[in-house]
Every structure is written in C-alpha cells, then in structure tokens.
Amino acid sequence: MLFLNAVGEVYHNSGPDGEAQRYKESMDLIMKFIPMTPMSIMTMIADGKSGMSSPEMIRISSCYTMFGDFDKAFGIFLKDVRLHKLMEKHGLKIKDKHTIVEPWPLRVTEKTTKEEFEIRCASTHTGCERYVEFERI
Image 1: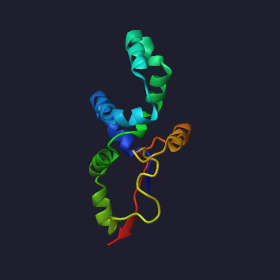
Image 2 (image 1 turned 120 degrees about the vertical axis):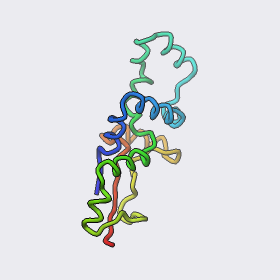
Image 3 (image 1 turned 45 degrees about the vertical axis):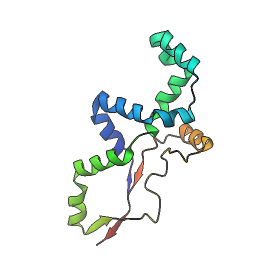
C-alpha cells in the first residue's frame, strides 16, 4: 500500500511551528545537498525579503519536503486514522521486514548521493512517500 500524502498532511496540520521545527531539524542535511556559503547567507539576510528569492532559497523551499522525521509523522498519521483497527478487523499486520519495496524509497538521507538528490528534485516526488506491506495473522 502506498501512502503519498500521509506525512505531508501531518506536517501541514502541525501549523507553522511544526514546519519551522522540521526545517530546523533538517538544515544540516539540506546544507549537504544545497551548500550555501557564509557570504550567500549574509547577502540573503542583508537583502531582507528580496533575499528570500535568491536561487539558494528558491531551491531549498522547493525541495525541503524531502527532509524530516518521517517515521514520527507517519506514526502520528497511523494513530489518527486508526489503521490498527482496520488491520485487526481484517486479520492483518504490518510486515516487520518489507520484501517488495523499502518503506521510504525516495527519502533523502546521509547515504543519498548528490546525483540521486538531483534526480529526486527533478521529479514530482516529495521524498516522504511511504510504502506499507501487510501480512495475514
């Protein structure tokens, strides 16, 4: 089963504070893929609102959804939709080990290469697409 929007919904519903925290937690990893020099950061700050339209900021804002604690957000989603009740009703459980596709195949991590990151940025993927495999109990 593919969950395209579950993580995004949790982050969206957490309001601006949740988005800001997610961005803050992800900054080190973002900087790995979109390096910014101290000079470019100073220029953006000095430019005020117009600095927000710098190429680096546009790039960050267009792909920062690929970064974050997706496991926590997905756990909140599962609890909110009470998936455990549905699985229980139909005699299912989430597989401990996926055998068809990994849970987060498009997630950006420390192991992601620059080339893989560029490919993901060029696609319509958000990075937080989540696959879940079930098995009968």
